[in-house]
Structures are given as structure tokens and as C-alpha cells.
Amino acid sequence: NINCDFFGKSALAHAIGGYKMLRMMQRYEEAWKILSDRTHFNYCTFLTNIRYEPDEWKKEFYGDAQELMFDNIAKARYARRNEYNHSLVVNMTHSDHFELRLFAGTLDYEQLLTCFGIAEGLAITAKKRSIEWVEHVTWYELIETVLGNISNTLIADYAKQYCENKGVL
Picture 1 (cartoon, rainbow, N blue to C red):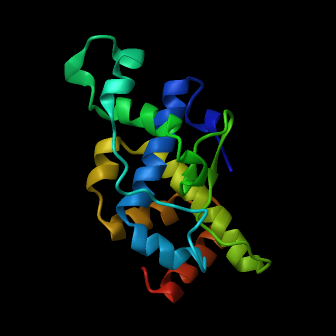
Picture 2 (cartoon, rainbow, N blue to C red):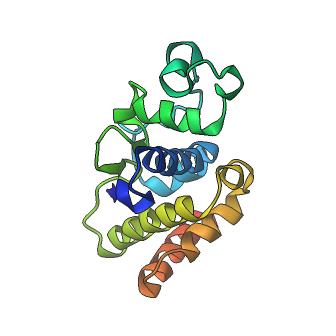
């Protein structure tokens, strides 16, 4: 779990941070699935075909400002309140934290540390990088950035080795 306040105190900061993490996962769904070690994805969906329906929510956020209805802030707020959110790879339904549902449960020490490290690296990357960067980054640049943002060098080494073993680095 990642505390929403890591991204800032406002609901908008929470929504944008969660949205950036979700988009980093959605854009490279297949690579993340390889890393996940899950045998099925019934409770961890990527919803890469998520539709943003402005008619029902645009006035709540923008009033009559039609030109803003499809911007990234609106998408972030919509993703935060989407009814399918509870099973998204980044569950944003909780008021105080985001739940990363990517990884399968494990008792393996190194794999558990790797999961924590990748979660930390994703959160830091989402905080530091713009939505535009998230939408245009290559997989290899993304995973290198995520791994580079892991603060503990031992965990970063575990995570890098794990990614190499899985063939995604």
C-alpha cells in the first residue's frame, strides 16, 4: 500500500499520483504481468480499455468548461472514482492509500523485498514525473527509472536481478 499523502495533501494530488501509477501499469500490461507471478488476473485487472465518459461527471469538476473535459486531470479524477477501481492493478478506492494488486503473495524473502522495492520505485516515479512523461516513456526507460528510484541498494539489487531473471530488463 502507498499512502495517498505521499503525493500531496489534496484530493487532486492523490488522484494524479494514482492515475500516473495506473497508466505506468496499463501501458505495459504484458511486461508487468510477467513480473507479477500471478497465475490469474481475476482480481487484478489493468482495464486498458477504460473509457472516460465526460457527460456524467464534467460539471462536477469543471462546470461548463467544455474544452477541459478530456484533460489529464479530469481523467485522473474519473479513474479515482471509477466503479471498477476495486480490482484495478492500482486500487484507488481507499481514502487514505493506494493498493497495488500486481504481485502474487509470497513468502520468499527476496521476492517480497522486490515487491516492496518496485512499489516504492513506482510511487517515487509517479511523484517525480509528469503525466506526459508517463504517456510517452518506453518500457526500458520506465523500468530503469522505477528500479533507480528504489532507496535501499540491497532491495534495488534484488529487484534488478528479479527483472533480469523474468526477462523484462
